[in-house]
Length: 526
Image (cartoon, rainbow, N blue to C red; front, side):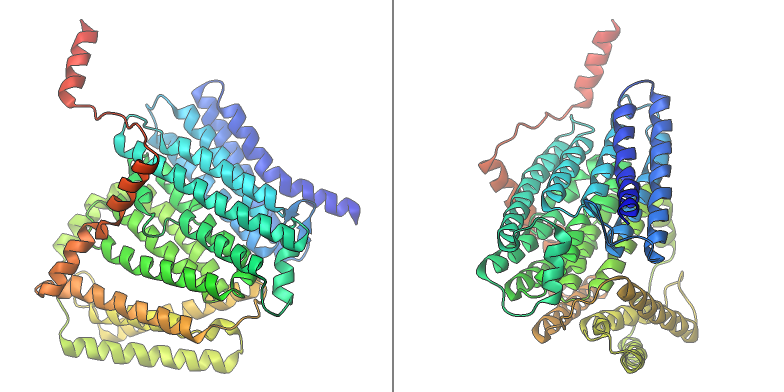
């Protein structure tokens, strides 16, 4: 048995070790060899993490192996991280042709995902914290890939400071948990909260709130979101790495410690308030943006907020599904952003028609009826807590209402029957995937709070109202006012940037003028 545990520990250690070794060797030698090493290490990491997940599904892998935590959550996150690394390295080999710092890039990407692998597998608080710090420092170097760009330097400076604040919150929370449980093993701490009842102590409440703050900061929630919007100055593969494989680690932190979070009313209230409002505001701001990368960045802030809300409601299986889908979609969206011009031309050729009030009413009735029937069926077949919350069904009904009501654009014209069939397929896929991921994760034992469910449902209705005003009610004065504030991002980032630079000044590179660059080029040629 000891030999088996040692073998599994070796296999789990091999994933980050291969990537770390590749990062070291890629930084030296010819450029072509660096890319070959990157392809070999990321392919090996992907195949090994997939094999480990298969072993976990077959119950052939212990939940804890040495210093690693190898539950289903950890193995799925490991596979996701290595898949994103595999895709980014292959895309970047072509995208960065001609760049003088290609070896530095491929080494840093491998270093980032090696640290991510350590973070998601680690079963010790200290190892998790050091891995989180390593991810942030390596990511900082990638964000400064073009150090002469002022916006990139400003974004990296703000992210550096906010990341240190998040790590300080996590470190303090970990210290409180260590003092209370007298152990640094994450699996032991989490299992204590999953199996025990009773009120939390003041130290445990403080630890839960600090973990919630760390996740909110790491997930770029409003008002500390500006750096995420400005880092689009970095190369596109850096954005794919950040949005697809790094920023979701705040959500992973809350998923990991969800048994503690769900027993702390103040921590839940903090996440539901900050992430809930931030998600709605970011989604509305996203609708005013033209640049595809900026729109995707605002979308990430909104989606991360929604994922944190799902965790705070106790819908951990839904949050895990959301995390995986969002990471894969955002990596794809950034890497395919070069097709944005063609997509925009197609959209302009097919303008939508605003639905009439009767069309909105019919779409709403169909959507509510369809969702209500599925809810009744799901709750009749299973007593799982995953289907107790009403707010996800409210969001699903509102989304289907928009889908059915706006079916009359030239690109999406079709029969009502076809769209109802599509809506039914969406609902069934949602229920099926939610049930599947509920089987992967351990039962939290905590029901959905009524006040939290009502609050999130109200936010979804508010989001629907804001969407309708911005899409179909721009002739109203209230909509024009809302659009003006959304276009300015509600002036939140300006306030944060001003105060950040006041508290911690940073010299930014001067903007290079084209005329100066032309003069310098002529002088060097002579």
